[in-house]
Image (cartoon, rainbow, N blue to C red; front, side, top):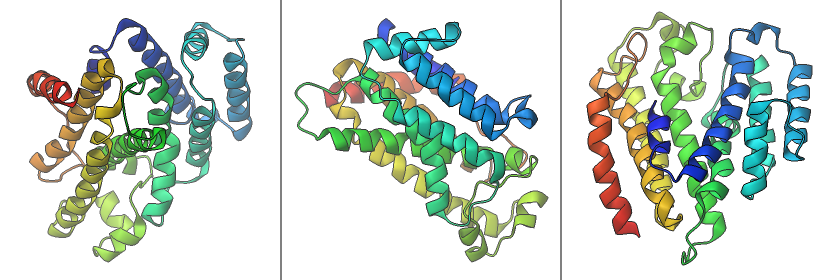
Amino acid sequence: KTFYLGTQLMTPERRKAVWAIYVWCRRTDELVDGPNSSYITPKALDRWEKRLEDLFEGRPYDMYDAALSDTVSKFPVDIQPFKDMIEGMRLDLWKSRYRSFDELYLYCYYVAGTVGLMTVPVMGIAPDSKASTESVYNAALALGIANQLTNILRDVGEDSRRGRIYLPLDELAEAGLTEEDIFRGKVTDKWRKFMKGQILRARLFFDEAEKGVAHLDSASRWPVLASLWLYRQILDAIEANDYNNFTKRAYVNKAKKLLSLPVAYARAAVAS
């Protein structure tokens, strides 16, 4: 819902292009997290990757593929981030623990950092920007990482009920916590302290991402900044829930979302 609201602020052509990318990403994620995930094998993901290659070459399989194929024909979108996302799905078939943040970062890149790289060609870089193309893409990558870290922190309880822990195990151990503490789902002072550190890290990635907004095409600054601010508020909601992300789902209510839009618009205008 947060993502959708952000896309409503885009120009019609960009909105359709981003929707096409989102639908492909969602379908890819559903392969390993959806109702038929127990039947998905590495070979099935190989077939999905071949299908991706076909649609990039103008041979879509269905209408959803056709929407992305149309996007690819209109914007200079590269296939590699899409392939990398499929690699993240391959990880999800067998990996449910992450020993360190380095390991978790790579997973976050595969499943979400890639989305930032997919969408920069659609958003466009401002013609008068003095920033390097690399720095703009790095900011987009940071936004994808920040969003995924936020998802992980929001969904700790939900993931644990599926036997998954997307938290750095070495940092859990340093905080005096174990996997059993996650499955038990009890909010303690140790958990609160651990969560504060995880939330701080996610916010730092959001800060890094925000630096790149001023260098986007002027028509893209408001929707991207609004999306960033709206998603970042999920971290505030986790705090408001006293760090109980085991049984309470953190979300931003509609009123708060709508109040954020004019503020984001004003900030985006200043960046113009």
